[in-house]
Length: 551
Image 1 (cartoon, rainbow, N blue to C red):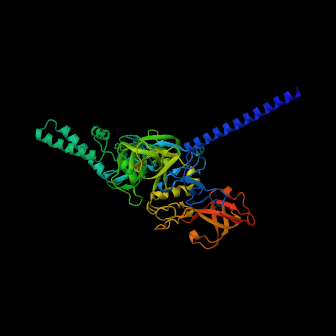
Image 2: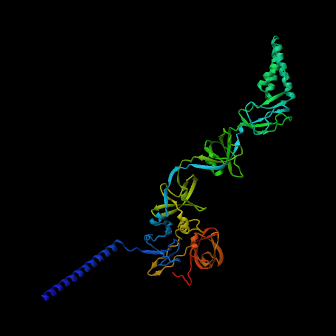
Image 3: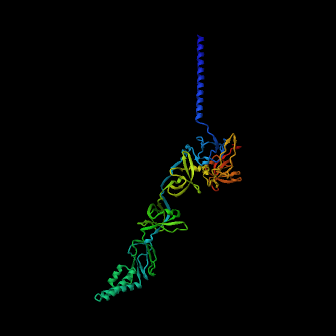
């Protein structure tokens, strides 16, 4: 019985071992099949070279690390990179394109908008001044010689009404003309029964005397009183009958007792119910301003009360000193709030010349010498384009050449500031002026990355001109962190700039760069020339004691 049980146990053990071996063999076979299948589905891609992880124009035929210990990123045939390996802003070589991973695009908040045809309305903002409407200025100047006996309007700034008495005058010529007219009127009455020739002659004399008084601006009422009474008055009241409406005395020269000569201006009266605003428009904008354009005027005295007006005249002359053209607007001023000589802020609404191709103003990167727009070719892939701009509106700018209707352009690109050196590397493929003033190499002259061949590295072909260097790596000693945000560093020679060792101040791209560095410590840093003569530190790392670099 015991022997039989032992045999059963042995049989079960052998069966278990056989089953395990079979399972292992089948699993290994399945695994091999799966491995072969995966290998067949994902063939190995050829690595062309390794690029700097920060997007700098530095490549290597073999794997290496940069000064911060970051691995260089492999670049595969076809320009592809492994997911997650791309830097936040990487230039893709000779094409001049810029690639950002989809994840980074979302994190950076990159926004795009379509270039489209639209009417480019514009608001021209200029400074103006309030002036008196010249058509409503009236000078009170008697046409005869005399003396002022009494003033009825005695000061500048007084309001006067149409027909209001201004002053009383005495004039020997005026008294003589009155007497002539009175005698002529009496003669006409006395000769009413005489022959026709006598009556006609006396009537002509009366008419001539009356015309003389009217030419001297004697009012009709005074002439009637003179004809009725037949007595000449020694002095007459001179009225403001030339003022067509109520006005303000802008200037007063009349004084009681003074003598005046014919044509001498004694009062200047202006109607301020409507005034002019004269604005100086710059020469480049004057072609957009047309008669009839609407304008809005604001004054410091009434910041919450805009005044509406219309352009009534574009002056035909240019101010050579300021290169501006005066533009006149008529503004209603019924309450007299607008005072002559007030300064005003003027906004003139001008219409565009029709539908033109436009992009948002925020999409244009202006380097001073050229304008760049980043065009989205595909999700995560962008291409810098040099564009030629036309007129500008409030939020959009006209593009004359460089992009086409319907292309997507980047409108939120603040991340370019933090990756300035990388952008310059991408722009080097566009030709023209680059970061440090040199010319970008042509497609034939561009430096090609070295390719490994049978384990041996071919030396890269020498370009005809030295390529522009974007970032410069320097070693030195941190002396001080200045209060203005700069740092004082004593550095060694910089071969890429032909600099000797010296002590100088540098600007920090970000104040946090020196958080882990102490005054007096040895550092390794990288500098970029943001503008001529201004060098900015984009990376800074304190060197540990007894450290050495190797790649």
